[in-house]
Structure formats: structure tokens, C-alpha cells
Amino acid sequence: MKNLEVNKVAAAILIAGLLAMASGKIADFLYHPVEEPKTRGFKVEVAEETTGGEAAKVEEVIDIAALMAVANADNGAAIFKKCGACHSADKGTGHKVGPNIYGTLGAAKAHHADYAYSAALKGKGGNWTYEDMFAFLKKPAAFVPGTKMTFAGIGKPTEIADLVAYLRKQNDNPPALTAK
Image (cartoon, rainbow, N blue to C red; front, side, top):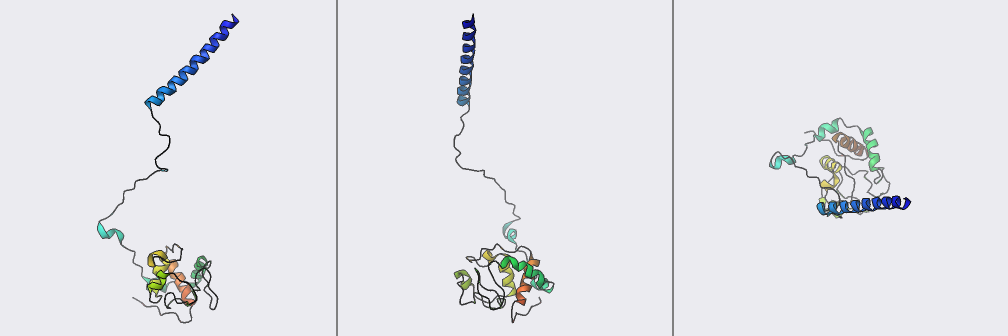
């Protein structure tokens, strides 16, 4: 009798294995899984909302004279710490990764003969006006496409005004503030 019980158990295991294998084959037949994705990751479709034509790209107008009237150079000195990793602003000190910016406001763009400016900044021409300085500090790559400066920019106009007020103090002869 003992052999009969062992045969029943072996037959049950064999039948269970055959059923599992058959159900796997049936599932593969009904559903064909993709082994490798064609592209990695997910693509998220985003509908762009536009209000029509050129009105979608209206640039924020900044009243520089009003901002400079309330700018705080001491706050600008704290903000300059972000810049201090690459620039020095002390009179008579050398260049770091970026040029020394003492006396830059009002000076010609790319005015240090002993610093290798990008061709884009050399080609920009003109002097560093308050308007140019605001635009450059907001987004350097947008103001001078091709600049070597990798800093993304400062988003808050009040912080830019504070920084420009600090840079104004780092100058023997800063340009006059003009009211609009």
C-alpha cells in the first residue's frame, strides 16, 4: 500500500507541474509581453497654453530707477557672496575664474585687457549701463548668448537692484542714476 501512496503523491506533483506549465504557455499565447522598451522613461505630453500670438512672450518691464531708489548696498554685499566664488570686487585684486568687477558699472564691456572674455561678450560692445547690468544679472546667457558665465541669473528684481547698488559702491566713478 505504501508504494501506491507514493505514486499518488508523485502523480499529483507531476500533474500540478504540467498544469502550471500549460497555464504559462496559454498566458504567453494570449498576452505577448514586450521584453525591451523602445525608449526608456516616460514622455509626458503637456499642452501649451497661449493667449494668442506674440502676447504670450511679454517680457516683464522693470522700473530700474524706482528699484535703485530703494536698493540696499549692504544686502547687495550679502548677495555678492554668490558671485564671490568666481569674481572679486576689491580694487587692485586680480581675476579669479571670472574677471575682477571693481569699476565695471559704467565701464566698457570686456574692459580688462588681461582677462580672456568670451567672443560673445567682446562683440556685445558699449558700456555697462544700469539697464544692461540688470538684464545681464537676470539671465546672463539670454543677454549675451555664448557667454562663458555659467551662472543662471537672479530672479528677483529687488535682489538685482541690491547687487547693483553694491557694485555701484565698488567703483571710483559710478555712473549717475537716471530717473525715468
